[in-house]
Image (cartoon, rainbow, N blue to C red; front, side, top):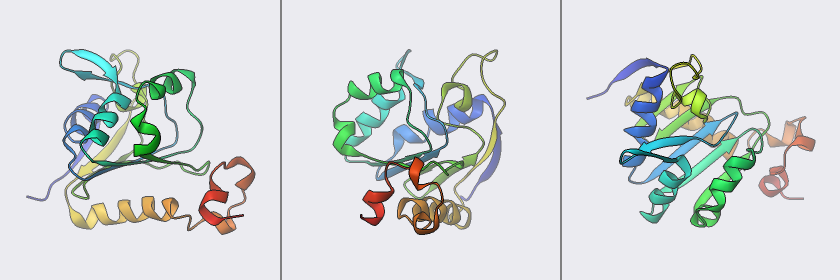
Length: 177
C-alpha cells in the first residue's frame, strides 16, 4: 500500500530513526546539512545513532551519508567507537547541501526540515527540540526524485560549476585533480 504522510517533531524520530532505519535490508542514504552527536533509544537505553548504523553495516546494509560541514568533537568520539564505519559507511562532504532526507531501501523516504541532530530529529525532550516537519512516503513516484537529487550530488553532477570548491574537502576525489 502506497502511503504519504506529513509528520512533525517527535514523529520524525519515531517513524524514521526508530522504525525505518533499523529495519533497512539493503541501503540507507542520509542527506543533512548539520550533523551532531545524535542518540537514539535502543532496548531501554540511549545509544549513539552511529551504533545503529554500525550494526546495519555488520548486516551488509550499505550506508551513504552526505553532509555540509564536518561534525563536532562528540560525533567524532562516537564515530571512533565503531571502526567498521570507516570502511563501511560512504561519506561525502558537500558545503552546498541543505536538503534533509533519509532513504531506506528505495522503498521509504523522509524529506523535510530536520537535520541529523537530536534537536532536529526530535530525539531531545519536548523543551529542547526544534520545530520540524516533513513528509514520509512509500510512493515510488515521490521516492524517485528524492533519490535522484541525492544521487546527483553523490555523483558530483554539480561539482564542475560549483563556486564553493575551496570549502569542499571531497570534490577532488569526485572529479580528480
